[in-house]
Amino acid sequence: IHDYRKLQQAFLNGWPCLPPGYSNLGQQLPPAATRPSLSRFSFTQIQIADVLKELQNLDPYKSAGLDNLDPLFLKLSAAIVATPITSLFNLSFISSEIPKDWKAAAVIPLFKGGDTLDPNCYRPISILPCLSKVFESQVNKQVTDHLESHRTFSAVQSGFRAGHGCTSATLKVLNDIITAIDKRQYCAAVFIDLAKAFDSVNHRILIGRLSSLGFSDDCLAWFTNYFADRVQCVKSEGMLSGPLAVSMGVPQGSILGLTLFSVYINDVAHAAGDSLIHLYADDTILYTSGPSLDTVLSNLQTSFNAIQHSFRGLQLLLNANKTKCMLFNQHHHPGWFRP
Image (cartoon, rainbow, N blue to C red; front, top):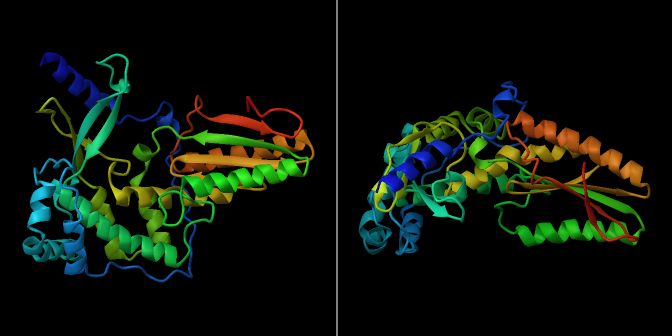
């Protein structure tokens, strides 16, 4: 028991933590790319039929959150509770407030191997309250419908979008590289990995992004409350740690959090310059091609510097150990090289 309590405290103190060098990032907020053509976005009332469908489709084998509201109970009682739950969701829109219980996450440490008392040897699995996930699913649908209908997302953004995915992103990049090789050109790429990207999202910057995308003042107030007073507790071996306040990042295990992260990094694509870029979640590939190796590497370095600056403006740091460069050409096997 003593060891598990020690693990809980170590894990709570060690995750999420900011990557080294985060405190050295500038605090000036980057300018948000305004889109005056976007229509104003406001939440619309959620319909009972939509909530009923969500409740009926719940996985009864999923774990309950810290509110101990079991998905099986909600699924079996869906026809009875759908109406009051829908009223509660719509009241949240009107008041721009979210119940605090819905903003508390249970974090379960999943052991990956190594030292059992080292928090870095565990993968955190976040369990959110069931009702918060149902609510966020409805909110996410309204948000994504607005963003997609106005083609807000960059064409090179494949993360968490309908009709896009890892396969489509890979095929696009691979086709560009093969096309360059067929033209007997050099092609160089940088595979960029961000350190704790989802945990490092600055809420003020994100709210500014939403404002620039036409979100109404009521929506901005709702999202401000959505991020406020969030906490998480570590749960292991049936024991629960004390709460830890979460003042940054998007909630893990949340479908809405994934969409918000895509909004957060979307404008990074504009910094690629003469190089090509593709974004998928927190992974980015930057690549360029040409007949001269020196020119290719020079252009790639220029674009990489601009992309790194753009990420720093979002207070996101590159993971130097996992960011790699690769050279493709017709004459030699592909190989890694140091930027």
